[in-house]
Image 1 (cartoon, rainbow, N blue to C red):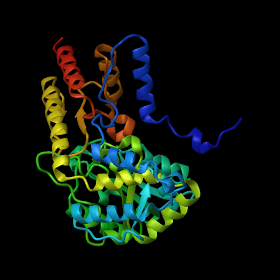
Image 2: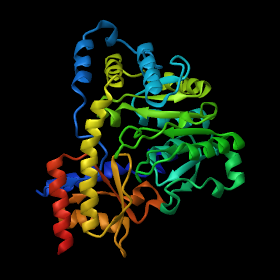
Image 3: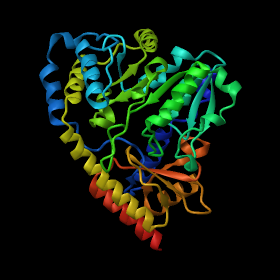
Image 4: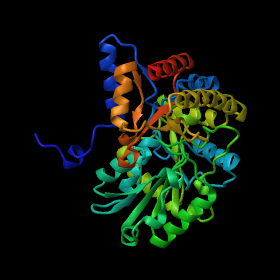
Length: 387
């Protein structure tokens, strides 16, 4: 049996390998504490779950949903964007529901990339940007994210001939894995670059509402001209602790949204309508709830920062996202340090090189770990380092 080259060339998905290592340690009777995967441990808000209970029995919700999403859900997304970012979008033409942002990001390349086309992809970055490109037959031009540049792509470093051939640029702020942020001034440069080279900007904005110290992150679509060149992917997974419910949205340029509708309507059957009802409820959740949830993550962030400082790791404190991105000790690689702390103190972190070659020399720690486990894990690290 011969498989398609697109399957054979793709490396194993990073978090599948992490889960395998955790299972192996547990099979050996070792208690593993994982800082590896960004999956919120905090529960979905009670009113959101209650909305599912109320609507699960409704007859229409037992049938195929429309791919683009319920009109009520898309209107709720538009209202949320207006309330949160001050942006007015057309819920009919400029919003589409997604089976989680990952699904939309993976499908998006099929709208723009033909065999041999180029996508500009951040490195380190979420693996689905590159995998979606490869599945569509495209090629990736890696945009290095470097600490000295604030983890932002240097647009001037992209060769002009590459930029002219590129069809898509992927961005992600607040950033996974680095925790970096971007401002409107930088997004203005991106819009100008996209216009100059006639490419589509795909902005993954899934972490805009996981923020610390009173910080507020903008939407790419707030930028003048952004709606002409871009689409923003968002998700209720990280904002409202709904990873298991698989619901998100894409918002932006109407022609780009329509292209996504064409692809999705032929490949999936949309988000279950009762889940969309949950999404509507979530999008109406109060800022007070978000502030309280973010305070929990901020407390965890601060504990992680103190512990990493104690054991001598350099960290730029993140203003947003669920992650702490730390430089490994001198003489270690991402993989060697990750394996060392797994073997010697049963702590799982994510090696930075799992997100691309420019992630080498760093590790990522997720804040989505219960407080008791977090405290025990950090204490293990401190005790291990002191030896």
